[in-house]
View 1 (cartoon, rainbow, N blue to C red):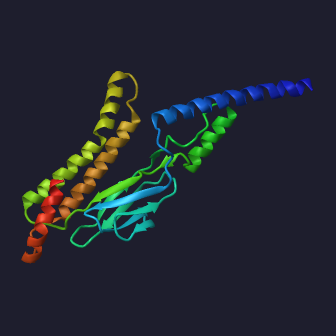
View 2 (cartoon, helix red, strand yellow):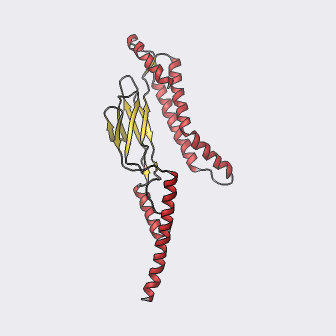
View 3 (cartoon, rainbow, N blue to C red):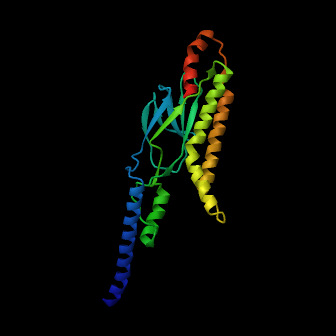
Length: 232
């Protein structure tokens, strides 16, 4: 009996300490991120609306929207997805969806045997990962009325890509300056790589877009719409 007690008491203490650490961890995460856990839904919109969109995981289509805006349901995963949209008068335009950590998901603190095991299982199953709740694809016109409009359109899109990560990259750079003797924030390096990928994709789209139109009537009709999109 004494031997059993000697075995049970440390185990009980480990469970108690692990439970306290887990409660503290989740309380801190809820305070920093008060939103609910991701429910798997992603709202897909396009500018302008009405495009047919599909969500790709490599060569496989995992979800579709017949006409944007619409909603798709996706499983939690580490996979990088791509939303591709098509519409008359526009090039096929794609937006990458990258998974990120979902801080609102309950998790065990990674201490002790139980916490370490739960952390390994969570990592293997991607149960704490999520995709953005919404994505908007700015459709790229196949034809622009003139070179100035095309240049303005792609420059606006380029600045939007840069601005989307500006605050996070500035924070990563600040951490590097604060700890010059340590390795810089790896998240900053990843974000810079992602930004370069998005800018390269935009450059390829710019090479495909044409200036002028063979049909003068169509060009006159589409010119105000293209100019409005470029100004956004």
